[in-house]
Structure formats: C-alpha cells, structure tokens
Length: 116
Image (tube, rainbow, N blue to C red; front, side, top):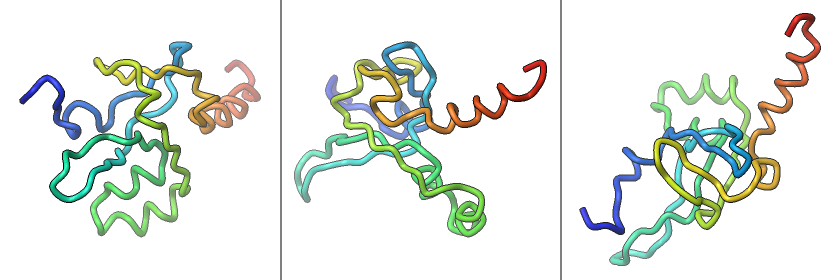
C-alpha cells in the first residue's frame, strides 16, 4: 500500500471521534466517497449517527433498527479531520460540527438523577 492509501474499513470505520477540545463526540459510522468511474476514490466526509450506522447493518436487522434508532446523520467534511491514530481527531469543537447532541441530551437526563 502507498503512503497516500489506507484501508478505510480497517483504519477508519467505528473509530471514536475526538473534537478539538478532547471531547468524545461519536464514532465513524460510515464514510462518503467521491470520484467517478476509473478515477481514484477519495474520502469526502465522515458520517456519524444512528442513521448512518443503521445502513451498515444486515438486511434482516434493518426493520428493527428503523424502529429503535433515529434517522440522524451528521456529515463531517474530510477537511475537518486533523489526525487519525487510535481515534479520529477533529479540528473544531463538536458543537460546531453538529456532533455530540445525543450525549448532551442524555447528560441533561442523567444530571437530574439524584447522586449522579
């Protein structure tokens, strides 16, 4: 494999997303590729959220997943990625990219629980 190539399925899918503040803000649930027939494929964006993950599930699980998960998908342009190591590091805070909304909503619920 050349220096400008890598296995998207192995090195990117399901990796954790970390924003510029060091906050965990989701996972890489899918990727959007660009390039025409015969052209090199390039990563255009990272897709994160239940709607993106649902599309990767086996066909027989999708009807149940549609009932359990929302359609939410956040598209993060590939130019927002600063580094890929064990996690995918992003250049900006999660809120600016539309990430972490589920965690924020869940956090509000947990904060109301006595002793949390």
